[in-house]
Length: 251
Image 1 (spheres, rainbow, N blue to C red):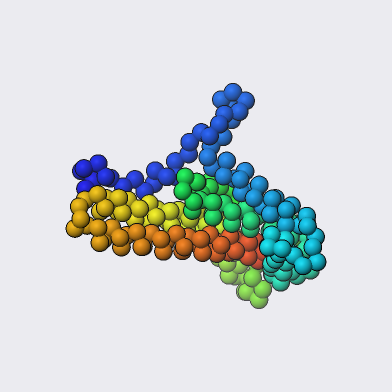
Image 2 (image 1 turned 120 degrees about the vertical axis):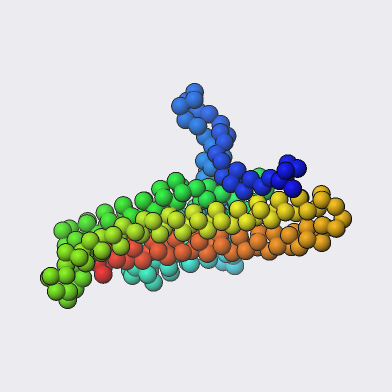
């Protein structure tokens, strides 16, 4: 079937295209940037229009805004402690920016900017730089004791300290790759099964049954993608809180 012009290009959907140009040709505004602006706008709109009524008995949008606020606030205080209230705005912004970015990309003709390693790596770098800065601000040089396991013989420190440093730096990889890989893999599967539907559906009546099966699988995958979108945003936010806990309490 590939020879008939039905080759599957599952990775073509991740290519960036210019959605606009500003300041001449110096700044290219891609569809990924457009989706980022949309995700940020949806987060602000949810809070603005949800909090504006201030009704005693909240409507659906106000209830969503209040539940979102409470959910992230409790996450911060449960994971970090009372100091977590200081980091609530950051965790809230990260969670909903990633959540809306993940969910927007499931819709037709949209783009999942969290499927690009450059985006997820930038978010992970922000978290790592912030947590390290918080630890240095609160503990000073004592922060480096974090890489020295307690109760370990001094002879083993030259071996264990580099391992602890690598483990700390690997957070950057785990944060960025986990989000990027999950979102990319899901969209590749959607593209593949979507192509199967077209290829089998146009190949003749005998192939309509497997085409229908591919359609059913694709519908299930779309539902699964929405679940993964929420789960990955939650995991990123929880890990951010855990890393901030380590920075605040130094253990």
